[in-house]
Image (tube, rainbow, N blue to C red; front, side):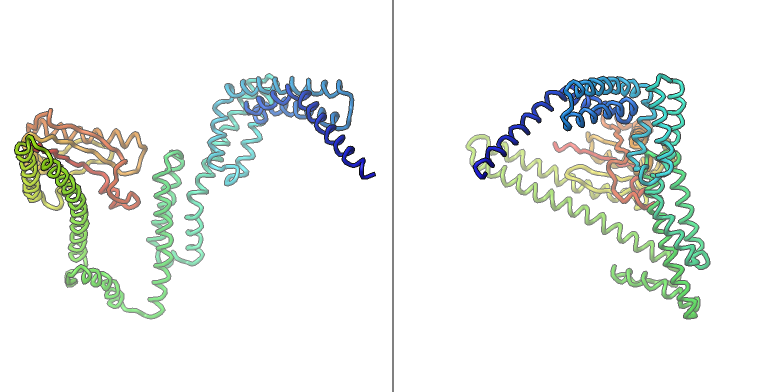
Length: 479
């Protein structure tokens, strides 16, 4: 009996291979049309015809496995192939006729509406399926009516899903605050959180595809809600311990005193905290600016030293023209030293609230902190003439230099609008300098960078204010 086992297994294997070859031959056309139908998204866009094809296809597989007559198998496969072809054609028509609702459905899926707005999604999907079935039946008008209903519901589902993802945490925090009776102890901060939430929701409703602003608003609302909870706990503690008003104010002043001490300053609080805070802010800003300039100077110094060493080494190894090239090198070094002296001269032109002056390589950058625009506007008001006159004076320190006016915005608003606004403002300043102060037009140019070059955090009002700026770049001639 053992001698027969290899023969039995070999025969079974041969029969399996033959059956597989037979299936591939019989199902070749049906498999190809099935793949084409799936690629055309027929299961979604032509559900009835595709389902008919799959039913015949399954019947063919069942008949083959059960050893039924091959003609019966072929008959079922012919039905399946025809149904798949018709489903593909119907899907292509649906892609054109229902293009708008298909895109809206895709947008809702991208927002995970099927997860975060399940009920709305199912209602929209029901009408979408109804639209595809009516289109399959030739009822184009009915299909479009159902598609319109589906599109409206998909948009509602999409918006609801976006709001859930961005705003659910804020709502949960506000609910927690209400439950903890925070409104009784920190009503102002809690109301601020609620107002930010409402603003974020309105921004999403107005433009769900520009989520930078509502995301930022939601984060601010989360912070204010947590802040309100903290303040309420602190107020309860102070009341329970019967703190006097004087004790509260002294505790309030203590952190400012510690910060001043860290800056080697004495906090004189006999006129309130405002003067001390202003002095500390100015000190920190100076330190930041000085640190940035030192970093730039250090990197440039290292690079310059390496370059000069290479040039001098190369000159020493060459026989001809050494004197002439050494003279040119010395002149260039003298020109760079002169630029550093002129930079110091320009620094003294501006007050702190007018401009911040820095140097990058041999270029001078004047950040016009004292020049602002009304929201969405690009007009240079007459009140800025004294400041721009100082800009003219700075430019004249470098005869023959090129001047580039750079416009920048914060991250709020669309990328395209910000780019356009920044360029328009830069052009307005450039035109003002040219027409009012006779800076030759061939020397001055304007460029807008929109929100692409932030210098501060766009998540804070102070940071966004710093990012909305005009920078003047002076590029001196070295010869």
